[in-house]
Image (cartoon, rainbow, N blue to C red; front, top):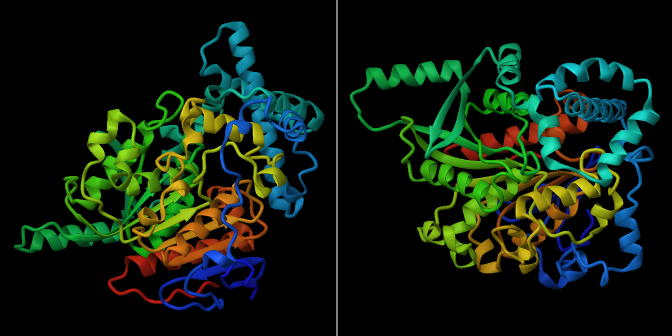
Length: 473
């Protein structure tokens, strides 16, 4: 192992596992990260230099203004599946952006853009130069509302229903509501039927306890990708036999901070306090989340401890008892909304999924381009919560890709929570980009399969009556 940050690191098949706290370690890790032996923060402290061109260094201003096109992004050429995905993503973006321009020029219904895009995909596919020109122009002047339309097919009811019919015949999927927020319950049909029989045959009026995973999806705060997420969520349900609650929320910029976080908070509190009225008790309750959903999940869990920092319009709702879940699982988390640079944000500034201009646009959509993010608000950026608050977290496990522009978010947050003895593990899958579990065809890659095996094993452990040590590989 390498003890460069006060914590053991081991590598196996391109995977780096950092193990700290509770239950020992098979990777040589120590129990915590001593302050004297760990970097305080990879992402620079937020400040006026992040937004004021007069105080920004010339090199940084040039770099942000002239972000290179993703063509030479070597990390997307490391695997044929990634290379094919890059081509498909760029082609789809170019086709949809062009189709929407045609629709606006011809004053056609917006829905016509999706039909027009289909032949355009075939036209752009063999023309990488034309594709690059259109997508790069959009990078230079991103519009998140336009992106919401581009992402929309992954949340259409038809798309979700099609995926369910194709790969979810053994999964019972039910749309419900908790405190006015849409949730989707996912469970094995056989388990649901057995539970129903047990309840009908018994004379106990108490609601049955169900091991529950509340999942908060990602989507850059502006959308979610439910149809794509179902592929890995169904595997979680099959291999762990949990009841999974997919927690929807309102999207920015139409619903900016703190509205999405409050949607997640209300759903979480209802599950944790057993007031949701869905006929079961969520026990144990594990909160899992992906990308921007990790920001919302962490903020929601910590909100009662941070009510003094909350905007006045929601502060009264946060003055409640702090109730932690039994554990948390964070996948490729976004925990720092500040626009400051860091090694990973600069190194992967031309990433296909999260190029620097889009990263800034997503953050601005959520915080409305206010100066609020410079105040180190822990409800907006959970990494800025105090040690006294962070040490209240339950066991917290983190997975992220080594080629993710937001890798440093994971490393910084892991450093903060391990210093205050929060148990858990950070696992970095060195050859994977952001949100690697969300692409169904990526599961053919060995590292994604390894990540899925680990997350399934973790959820089985965390939802079991007694905790057992999880083998990482």
